[in-house]
Length: 168
Image (tube, rainbow, N blue to C red; front, side, top):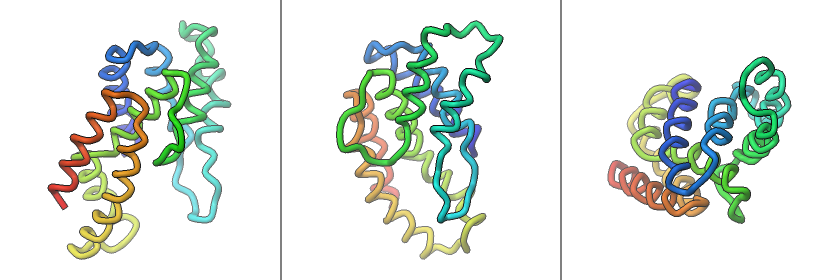
């Protein structure tokens, strides 16, 4: 799942950045690396995957041709991609684009596949449970859609949210 999610974020980045004038090189690098340090942990543990990935970035990019002058922008985007709802629009634009692409990947048909493929690994799967989790997800998805930073992402989030609501 993690690779499929990352690939979806990269593809959404390639779609979104040209539409809003963001630096694709920065956002695509952040998309490939944003969840590099994400792992399953205990429910009470603190999730530090964004900080850990941002700290690992310099070592990861050593020996590549990625511009050193853009690494701080990548780190900033990675550090701010977490959460399912925003209280304010993110800046700079590249940080906003990573957040939007990451969250768009969780909306629409992709979330249905996610639930179908991995839900059973964490709890029993039955129709009632799937529908109940789906209904709770709609509430979270509405918050995600309302938090999009860029106009193209807001429009795409509305479309994907409508799909989810129709499905459930």
